[in-house]
Picture 1 (cartoon, rainbow, N blue to C red):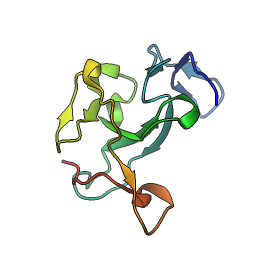
Picture 2 (picture 1 turned 180 degrees about the vertical axis):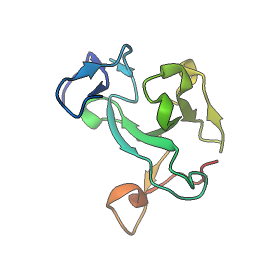
Picture 3 (picture 1 turned 90 degrees about the horizontal axis):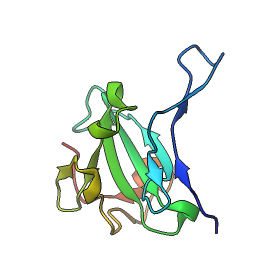
Picture 4 (picture 1 turned 45 degrees about the horizontal axis):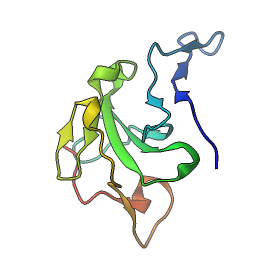
Length: 123
């Protein structure tokens, strides 16, 4: 087990010559989004790949997986992120991040996003 103080995006906009940190903390000590897997895989609800989906877990991976999304061009704008509420809806209110697991392991393929089931089709 390990603890986290916060998580941020670190990125390069000059092909890796330099790196910058995002201006915001994506997750804090108690966040469900301290460890992320990101994808913009095309599919129903994301035909053009314009949305980035994040599968997030708390520090130390001790907790269920949560689901968030953001438009590709808004990745570094915290207010643009939406969080799946578990009742087939998305919420943009950061304070309402879900506390319960949204995704569960299902039998079958276990690699990539296909190993999870959210019980919904992204819209």
